[in-house]
Length: 328
Image (cartoon, rainbow, N blue to C red; front, side, top):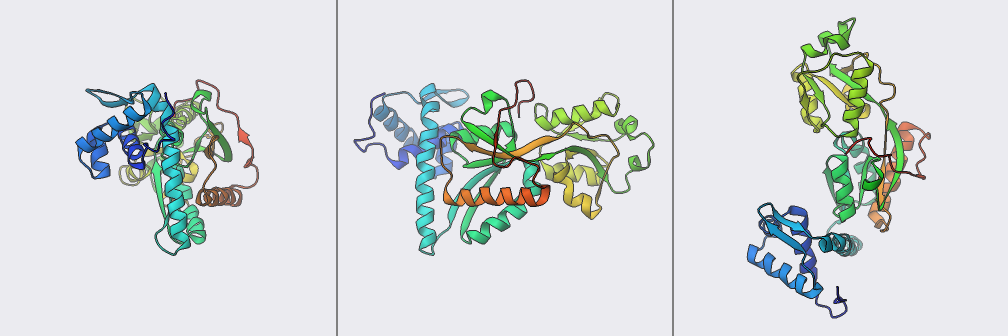
């Protein structure tokens, strides 16, 4: 690839179009997100390919697939766009105009627990700010972080190959528990594990780390194999099933903390030993956090220390999880 940056031909619109097509998987969706025509997107991508001297996308029935060269280029393009947006946001903040922008990712179960306190702390320091929170499974959060679509994530440690270029900073450990609505018949049962099959069971999706913890919990309590269950990642959907459908919900403890404290949900007396999973900050090793991201990082450390104690090594990046522990 020839060095074509110095001649000034790579423009912001080239990077915007490239990232939109790469992240959305097609020209049509990219055009819609950028509010321009499809021919304009195609022309801009063709210009960028000519400038860089490489093919960036393979176009086929499944949309536009990034080539190897595009995958190499993507984190750097994202970093450029992100840095420019941050700079504009900071100047706007100093001038009392529009807000700074921060894009972060959280596991849905973590967001339910940490987002309220975290946003309160962040907006106290940055009164005019736009925060975009992406909630997704761990694997997707890590990919978004690598591509630069988000600046940091609060998630779980994954396999070494997924953690390349990333650092994990543990905040706390969280056990998995089984919860039901207040007054559920299983709360009065002498052997609730044996009767699980009589009620809807809500599990995390297959391949997630917390699904493995759920299967471990089911095995430890001697529950019979389940012929029927519901897989869902959304906390709000799972919560509704537990409250309205008599479902047994297997969920990380702090995601159900509010409803447990309020008495809307109750824990089933099933053993949760060994189901703890570390939750932590995930950052890119090749990028420095923006000032607003540093505020968020400090805030989440303080919140974790206040709520969960000082037992977590909050400033020591952990090694990646060994292979075979889970996909997400």
